[in-house]
Image 1 (cartoon, rainbow, N blue to C red):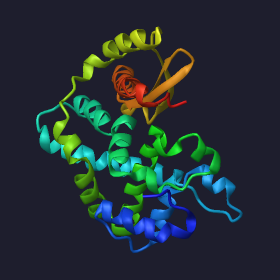
Image 2 (image 1 turned 90 degrees about the vertical axis):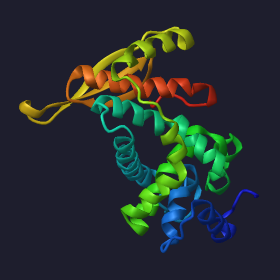
Image 3 (image 1 turned 90 degrees about the horizontal axis):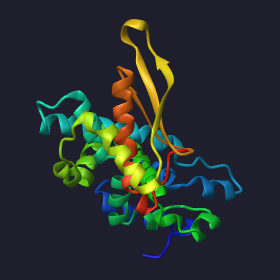
Amino acid sequence: MADPSPPDAPRAFRELEDVLGYRFGDGELLEQALRHASYCNEQGKKQQDNQRLEFLGDAVLSLCVSQRLMSRFPTAHEGDLSVTRAQVVSEEGLSEVARTLGFGNYLLLGKGEEKSGGRGKAKILADAFEAIIAAVYLDGGFQAANDLVERLLTERINAAEIKNFYDFKTRLQETSQARLRATPTYRVVQELGPDHDKRFVVAVTIGNDEWARAVGKSKKEAEQMAAAEAHFRLQGSDAGIRPKR
């Protein structure tokens, strides 16, 4: 299919609905999910890009995948489930599914992003995936979004192997030294909640780049979860996946 331009958008969006197996009552939600910031910046009229939907979709997706992993691994530890979920919903994983389904054909991109190959960029595809999940959630409710996650990610969830929570700092160190010739460093960037129920936000940095952040009940737990996310992200760096910041 040719790259959709705004006049062809209704036809293109109907094709995408066929791919998703879902019909929108409010087509504007689907269009917003596909609007990259570069596209909105070039429009004469003010339009909202997909970043807010991406934020919501991340949370909805996390809940849907968590529920399935808990059912699949009924005796798994919370930390093991967390890092296994990170494997399923990593930028690499979501962009791979989005690429296979042809999401890039439907993106609304600015001219500069179009020329630089934005339709194939992992981050743009993964963000659009999460934004579409949010659009379905807002349009049809949680069950509709949950059904969509099942259609799109069941294969990845079924293929996921439970990951040992306490392996990832070691794994990340080995991978980062092999690929980047650098050692990860961890720092607590925020503490949340009262003293009796505190949460720690830890960022992991490799070189000058932050690769992941995670929240845990202890500093050690947060470090391991951040290491898991960074590990999966670094594994996908050959496919164009870059640090978070």
